[in-house]
Image (cartoon, rainbow, N blue to C red; front, side, top):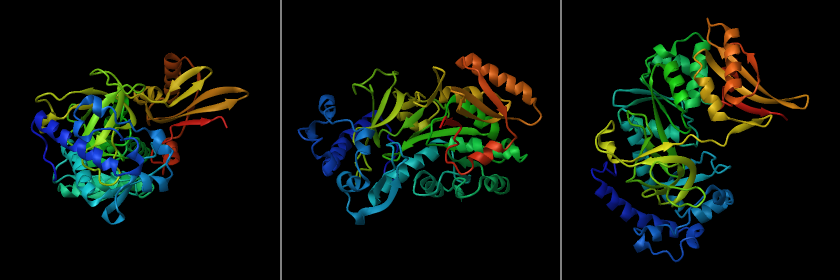
Length: 430
C-alpha cells in the first residue's frame, strides 16, 4: 500500500503540510480553479489565514457546470492517464463522472482497504456484496480490496443486478460471514427474508458493512436485530474516496487525515466552529489529485469533530480524529402546518419491534392533506394492536392524526424491489 498508518500527529502534520501545497498546485492546473486561486501563496498554506483565502467549493458551483465543461475545465488529466471513471452519487443534483488516474487509484484502493481493516473484516471471511456494481464505484472497489485482503467475494450487486429473493437464497447457500450494502437495502433483504419465512438473524452473517447513507441509532438497532450481526458503517464521497470508518465503539468515523484534510466550518460564514459544535464538513484531497482536485470541498455533511485520543477501541487507527454525523436532514413533510421530519419519523417506526416495514405518504383528500402510514406486522403478532400503537405514536410525537393501513407481509419488499434506496417517504399529492 502506498501509505502506512501514521504513528504520530507530527507525521500527519508533515504530510498535510507537504500535500496541501501539492493539492493547490494540482488545482491550479485546472481552468476552473485558475481565477479562484489567484493571489494565494502556495508556500504559505500552513498559515490558517492564507489557507482560508482559498474559496470553499460548493455544490451550486458544480451544478452550474455541464458534463463537458466539467471534463474540460475541472479535470486536468490527459485521457491516456485515466484508469476509470467514477459516477457521482448525484449529491450535486445531477450525476457527473470523475476521472481517476492510474496514480489516483492506488490511494482509492487504500482508502477502501482501511475501511475493511478497521471494520474487523479479515482474510478467510467471505463477503456477499449488495452494493450497486455499475458505474458507481463503491461496490466494485470494495470487492477488489476484499480480494486484496484475502476475503472471498460474491459479486451480487443490488437488486437490479441480482433479484433480492435470489440474494436471500444465496446467503443461505453460500454462508458468507460478511454482508456489504446500503443500510436501506439491508432492511429490504431482511423484510423479504421474513416474508419468505427465512430467519436471516440465524444466518452465517456476523458483520454488516454499510456506506453511502447515514444510519441512525434506531436504524442500526433494527438492522442488527434483523440480521443478528454487528453493523459497521463507513463514510466517503465520490469526490474524494472512502474517507473513514467506525471503530468498535461505533461512535463516529475515524477519518484518514493523512489522505484528507478536513475542516468543520460554520455553513453560513465558513469560519471554524468550536470542537464538538455542529458544522459543515469541508474536505481537501491530498493524494488523489491527478485528475479532479477537490480542494476545500463542502459536501453538505453536517458533522461534529473530535480530536484523536490515545488507546481506545481503534488500535493503530486511534491516531485519526472522529467525525460524527449530526443526522440532520432536509427531508420533511408539512401536514396541516406541522413539519414531519423523515429521519425522526423513521426512527420512531424502526424502534417498534412489532413492525417489519412501513411506508409513509402524503395524499390529498377533499382539499385536505392526509398522512397515510402503511405497515407490515411481524407474523404471530396482533395487527390491530400494532395499528393502534402506531397511530398513538404518530399522534404523540408529531401531533397529527394518521390513517394507518395494514399490508400483507412482503407487499413493500415487492414494491421496493429494484430501488437502490427504499422509497419509504412519498408525496402523492399530485
